[in-house]
Length: 290
Image (cartoon, rainbow, N blue to C red; front, side):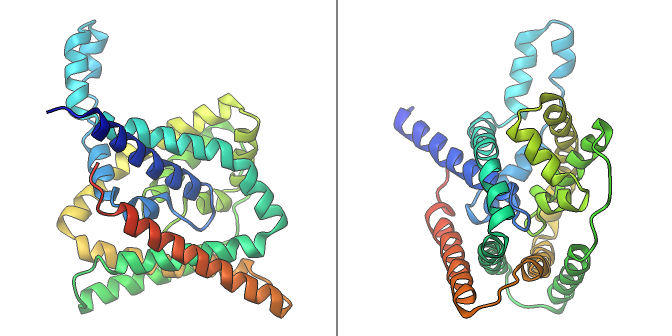
């Protein structure tokens, strides 16, 4: 029997996940994919994206709207995407100003908080791995080394033309859905992070739409590969992701430059608070199936 209360609950729980993912996506060093994983929605999200084949476009162009809608309902998980994208969009639009302010004025404390988020996320992903094996360990080391070197790269002095923004959207979205690599950090390396934050704050539509189009193309392409890896090589993939997360700890370490005991203690407290928030999210959301 259809239950409206369950439907509303499902919508709200997925919307909250979207809020958390959107918040993470604008933080350099934290991945929205990590939040999706710890809140128990990651595999469903990746699989849902990879299912979209755009077969509904052909009948739509022929004016066969009913057939197009029927195919679209089979391809697109609307009960997931509608509330999730609403949550992500709201978080990105409302928190971009706050994130810009925090990174400009309290960078060390902000990155201390990020470090707690990353460590807790790595712990939770590690718990997904079924036992120790040499193969998993090797892929974890590969992930760590890759992320450690990658984070140490200097930002590319790229311009802000629309083609560059399109490519930046394609690249960043792949990281945003992949636990362990921050899409926002990739934007920092591509010299597009502050520019896109300002574009969001000013609602500059040409830049925002171009970036979203690039992100759409990127996520549709990358999700198929990721869906395959999770289905056929889950533990190796998870081991690689744990390595990625630990390797990205180089970023907050580089950004935290504290000179007195009080600041160090406060930063440690913030990291513990962040760690606790992630563990709480995992406990509250992980096994809620909506």
